[in-house]
Length: 387
Image (cartoon, rainbow, N blue to C red; front, side, top):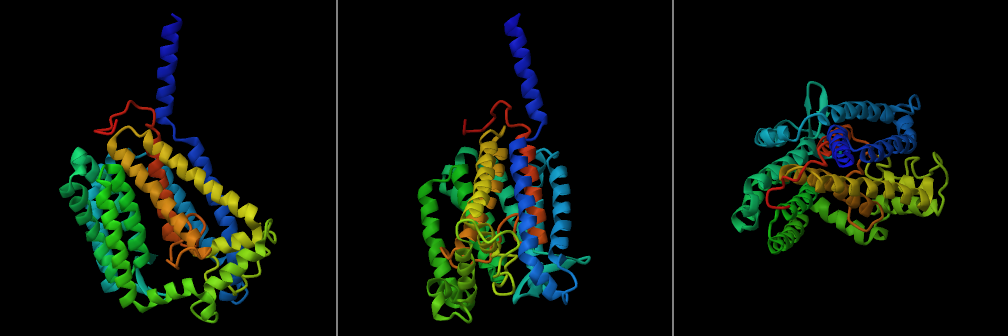
């Protein structure tokens, strides 16, 4: 009798787990969002006042807050949609993404010298943000279809590579090097999880390095970024200005920071202080301790995301979850590397912190899909070929 009660209790726990999202992941996500909005306001209010003739200090916060609400709504909705939905819609989404990317070349709007935005019904967004998500969904779909054949060159390299090129070619025509680099890194991780032979991934990495060198050689602005990275002091008034100001902000913060809202560099000294370089303002105001706590939140979120992926009920869900959390991880690492001058400027934002409505809404929606997968984390494994 006691054994029967134990089995029934175990079944009840599994049933409750199946219908409930992963609470630790949700708490970490909401913490990052709240802290991100707080730091965005702190980093942007001086710029907001300047841009509005000293009338409104919340211009950027209002826009980001509205997108956060939209993103949270999408997260709640997508957390209730089973992963099988994305399995069925992977190819249609892929086609739509390519059309949107190509439309940028024809009808795109130029912002800060880059043509990467389109406007539909008054809504301005970057199709590249949708393309990142689409690539992850399609790679998960291909992983399920290839199965053990992903170890073969025909499937594990040509199959994934051909699908990836369909998105990377339009991005190359847009001169969107940061998106190309980001998607290439996420794709490599997903291919490894899918079972592609590591030797082909190392060969692809070598080819990517050659591509970047050639790209930088022919694209002058990218070459300037590398020069500014290596020797920012040689041109402190132009190409090296931004990174020097970023380093000044980080150094000014010291161990405990100058205090929330008390940054000096945000007063129009550091360009894009509320966007790509918001982490420099975080370091200045919260110091090394505060910055490390925020990094710890990101690390905890990312590790929990992989924990969910490892406990997903099937191969497709595992690769989909791994791809989505890898996207957050790669963006975070690249952004922090750029702000601290460990990497050349890439134009990649810090998830949940940097200003950018499309990116924030899409990121929150993607986390909703992870939460959906987490509902089934304790189901019996149905991992085709990876038990």
